[in-house]
Amino acid sequence: MKKKIIVDLSVKIEKPEWFERLSSFSKIVRVFCWMMRFVNKLRKKPSYGTKTLTVEEKAKAEIILWSIEQKKHFREKENSVHGLQVVRGDDEVLRVKTRIIEREDDLSFLYPILLPSKHYLTECLIREYHLKYCHAGVQILAAKLRLQYWIFSSKRNIRSCVSRCVVCKRFTAKSVDYSTYTVAS
Image 1 (cartoon, rainbow, N blue to C red):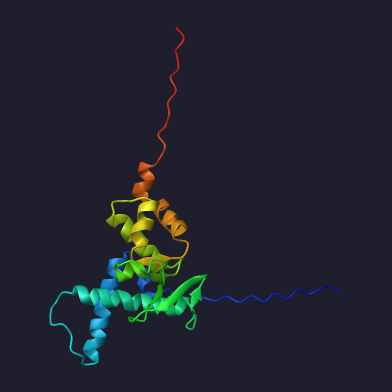
Image 2: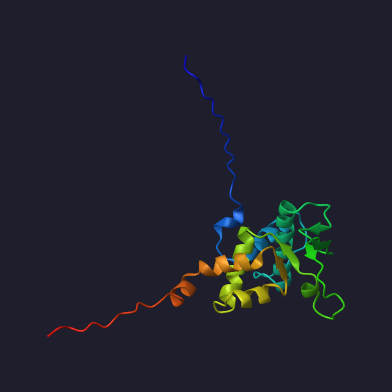
């Protein structure tokens, strides 16, 4: 009598997000901005009459984009995430309460936006900052990003993003060392 082996396999196929077709963070924000403008036009809300996007529209679109992604990644009623004190700002975005509260500084520095670690939008943001600051290294990128954003395991994410940069990889390549040989005469 043969033994029967029963195997059960379930595969979950996730659709890619709409923004994964776009390569840069600023392009994602611009497309989302145009989508918001289109939806507002359908709802008959007054919109900007200009053919170009304004800075306020782009900032609002970025905040809404982060808010949507945070709702997918973090629990709603949580006051602390991984030991960090998290507060919900006026713009409905989760922000990290830093230890430097008494200092008079920009609110985005005192309460940076909380971002998920291994997410496509976070990687696009790191890549954009990397190009914006002329292929800066891990330390400089971490310092610049921490002025506005709080990324979980940020240095690891930044390091992986910088290591995938073709230009940086080219300039950090080891040169070939040719040994000199004497030819017998």
